Length: 400
Ligand SMILES: Cc1cc2nc3c(=O)[nH]c(=O)nc-3n(C[C@H](O)[C@H](O)[C@H](O)COP(=O)(O)OP(=O)(O)OC[C@H]3O[C@@H](n4cnc5c(N)ncnc54)[C@H](O)[C@@H]3O)c2cc1C
Image (cartoon, rainbow, N blue to C red; front, side, top):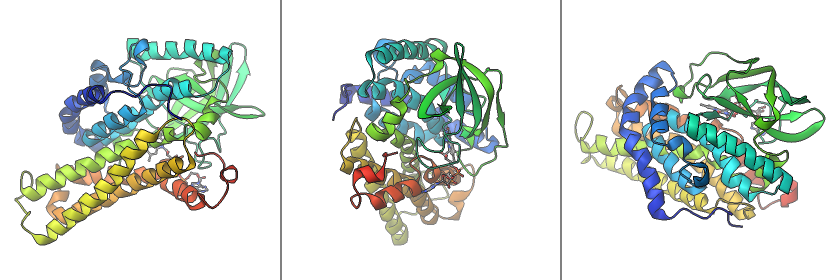
């Protein structure tokens, strides 16, 4: 089925991607500092806000730029070319905008739920467009690989709202987001709820150290919720809609891979510059061994890129089993090819390419993080692809 939201014309897509590209060189310059200090890229968010890009996927009639899923894929890839941590955190923000916008529009709701959803998302979008709110999406608890499995954070209904308690690992944008949108369950009901928690809520805190291998600017601490009160209006999707996403709009979980497509592009650009002598100690393009390695890199990149682009265009409600299988394959391909290509670049360019301030060593570390991202981690996708076509769809469960 196609999305109820009409596709964005190519000219408009190019305009939106150009908005990101304009900021790119400045973000690329700042990337090394954020990585070195494992600091959140606050200045980049100031610039994204000023350019209107916090509203990239906010529908136009709510004052946003109105990008759809496929256009977001292109913009996110462009951002990932310049700063992986900015792109990955921007994904957490934008994924919520898409979830409550295009994706919610494609899913079933009762008329009463649709009316309350309209009211609540209008308030959320007003916060983003008017007040520059940044949203985070700490879903992970580390208990199970499924999008709707292993959720133990509870939302106990009380007068006027809920009291939330639980713990989320890798809460990217810790201390930086204005809203932390968590998934949780109410007691004795497995339905997943999506609830937005303001950062200054009493009982919300962060714990743990942050000194990771890569994606250091994401600042993904552990989020603790200790009996935090949130009003009913903070529930961003009507109960049951988040569960529908895993069955009916599974491409939602693909968005994480766009950052890594951009990182791959950056590795390719760096290698071309290095081998031709535009950067680094001098040209190496006449060396047949370098040419052979560069050829392998291009083939790996083009295969992964082409599959990802195809899958981005197929995203929509109720995809065929083949389209879902391709989406899993695209996820594995991007998340595995990005570090592979970065590793090849190290070999092809040579030892001096690893010296800072050259960005290759950071790209190599950032690229390595993608495979671990749940619910469509490489392991989880491989497990699903391994069963696809061999069992009935009913036996294989939700797509995410
Ligand atoms: C830089 C970075 C930023 C992140 N930002 C966010 C964020 O903003 N929001 C967010 O929600 N998450 C975020 N994550 C978390 C990420 O999506 C994963 O949840 C996390 O990497 C899982 O870590 P783990 O060590 O618990 O993984 P694992 O131990 O591999 O898996 C988690 C659980 O799933 C089980 N499991 C995994 N695969 C399978 C399988 N195939 N079959 C059966 N069981 C399986 C494991 O046994 C375990 O219980 C981020 C991660 C990174 C690295």
